[in-house]
Length: 159
Image 1 (cartoon, rainbow, N blue to C red):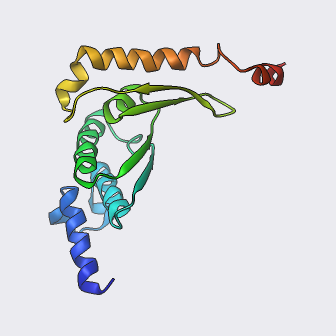
Image 2: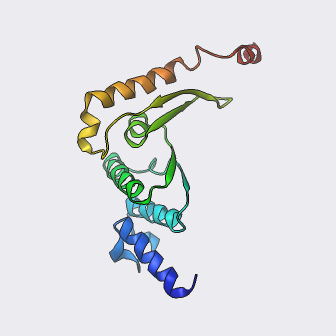
């Protein structure tokens, strides 16, 4: 892209992640949450059909993490990109997802799928809804039982 188009795209992406006034700041001048939002803007700059996010909010405090969850949902609604979000947080997985894929430990296999039927848009109140807690419990139970239903070849490998 030519310089003017690149600059325009940077401005669009910074506005998308609500950092429009920080274009001239250096990374060390931004908070951890702001740095994560810049990383999201960078990843979305070329309009990917699929965005893979591997524990992007893991190092953030709980309040920042919850705010970024809401912002990520807003960005997802605006862009329409498919997001594969890897997390160890059950509540984060349920809050952000349309489907949770529960993985087994080594060897990594799909232990189960949970369709998330929470309404959109998701809000802070979503995390307090009875259905949210039911889905969190369903995912937690899948995680607990994943070792109890091993396949015959897995049982042989363990012996």
